[in-house]
Every structure is written in structure tokens, then in C-alpha cells.
Length: 302
Image 1 (cartoon, one colour):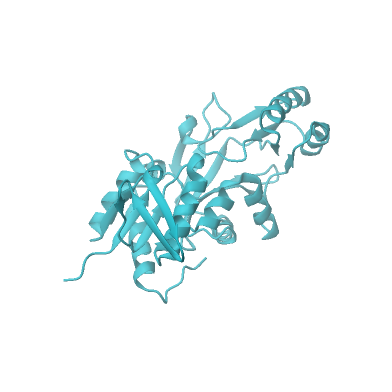
Image 2 (cartoon, one colour):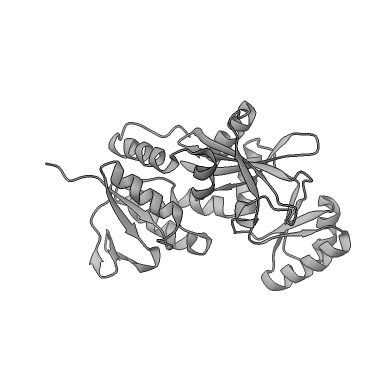
């Protein structure tokens, strides 16, 4: 009897809801779950061979890999994904797509080049460019760290004076800044894209105490049962443009009601959207990934 396929899940936080759900989904699909904390991996190159040790043991081959690495481990995660891809494992998202989508400005550059509308955004590195950026973007505006998720690293400045003070601080600390026009609506839309299809969607509403609609910041959510086709098309194209097999795409309406992509998350949380929609996203993901891994001729529809 052949051994079951092995699916590795790269996750530092082993107790997180998303990690636990994926481990259970892998087992339910008849595959062997392999939990790997990235920081306990050792990569070895020798002549033309590459090997991966987990803790002190040589890791056996894996059929597929699901990256659940947070922002601080992006580069480590991408190196592990390059190893797995070289070994022939089917990676849910590639090293290149993970790194690109984790850079908030670089990913917006790719989206704009693909004809996808985004909010007015400026990136700069010099103090003398501060006033031009504030004037061009306009206030109120938000400053975003180049990497971050769950609303962390997003700051609001409602006036030019507040924006200049905020940017002075960020330029001094990190020598770069990204500012984006603040959109006045208090809700946005999160769509989950898997291999070119939108499989779940929800609307998120900011609380009265916070301008951010992220659930981790106190936002509330409801299932988006009647997803507009233009939203779905934008979400599919956004994920495809960044080369992502799995992604969370966030859309917000501009003042003229035009949908704009705020960002694309390569490791979206499953907890909020599974709870809101009642959908088994983890199970759907694992089954689709296994189908890709076990059918070499079947390519993702990105």
C-alpha cells in the first residue's frame, strides 16, 4: 500500500487557528500533515545537492507545502519555498510571489501595471520629498509600513501638519515612507482567491473607535453572499498578477464608488472568514492543493 502524500505546513505559531485548521484538513483528506516551524529548519547546500534538516533530522520529501509564515519570517520562508520547489513539491504560493506581495508598495506597482486601480499612493526616502508627497496625496492620509498585516503599522494623519510630523518620525526611524490617500468609507471587502477562483468573501466594518476595518482591530464582518462580478474579477486578476495561488484581496470603494485594491495578503487568516461565512476554507484549500500536486499536467488557473 503506497504511503499517503505528505503536506508540510510552514508555521511559527503552531497554536494559531489557521494552522490547526489546516493540520486537521490535511489529515481529513487522507494525507500526512508535517508541521514545520521555519526557525527550526536548517538548509544545506553541498555541490549540486540541497537538503533540509528539521531540528536534527533530515526531512523526508513532501508532496506539497502550505506557507503560513508571518512578515518577520518572509525571507526565511521564501528560502524554504525555493528548496521545496527545487525538490518538486507543489507550493501553494511561490517564494517570489510571497516576497513580492509582502512588499506593500512593490505589489501595488505590479497591480497598477496590470491595469488594477489602487488608492493614490506615494513612496519616498528623503525629507525634502515629504511636503510634495503630502500635497500630492492630500490629507487625510495614512502611513503604512512596507510590510505588515492585520492593520498593524497603519497610522492616520488628518491634517497636513499632523502628516508632516508623522512622516518626520518614520523617515528618521526607517529612512523610507509610504503614504496613501485616506478613503472615507468605513467598510471594505475581503475576498479569498484559490487557484484563480473566489471561494469566499466578506464585508468588514470599522468600529466607532478605529478607522481600520480589520477584525483584529475591532472591526465587524458579515458574509458577502452576493459578490459583485467586478469585485470577483478584480480579485482574480490581483492574485494572478502577483503569482499567488492563494490570497486575500482587500477592496474598498473610492468617493466615486470605483473599487480600489488596498492590498493583497499571501497568508490570509482563516479564522474570521470561516467563522463569518461558515465555509470550510481549509478543507477546500487542501483538496485543491492535493489535486494540483497529484496531477502534474493540471496547472493553476491564475
